[in-house]
Length: 169
Image 1 (cartoon, one colour):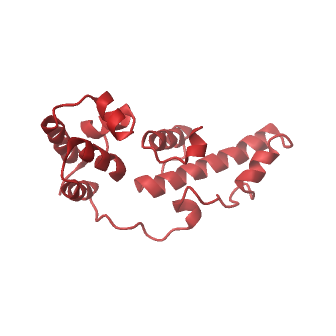
Image 2: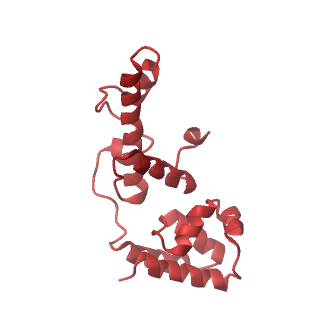
């Protein structure tokens, strides 16, 4: 079985065969951020498949072979995630009325009419649930509940280009 470090070693080999383009050149060519590319090449964590595929394409590698190596490094078959509610697995589905008992539009509308503490808590519930959606849909994990975990999830998703365009503007 392979590991993220072994996968990174393979990416480094492909990088060398491609003439050692800089991280900046790879960022331009793949459309992913420099830190996302650096992390993938350093083996800090296994990149998402879209990132790995973009790097493989930039290196002129056999993408089918790379997909197999990536799946092995992931440590489990590359199968669809188990059934989960749409609100958790899709960033394009509205967040249900959870702790706030309200949806996103209602939470946003209430900010000027409620106490600041209640409005902030309702907004935080929506942001935290969005991080759960992103983590499950793209990274096959669940972030911790600390604010830094949630911020890291959104940052990684932005670097990987998986946030909806309207959220990044």
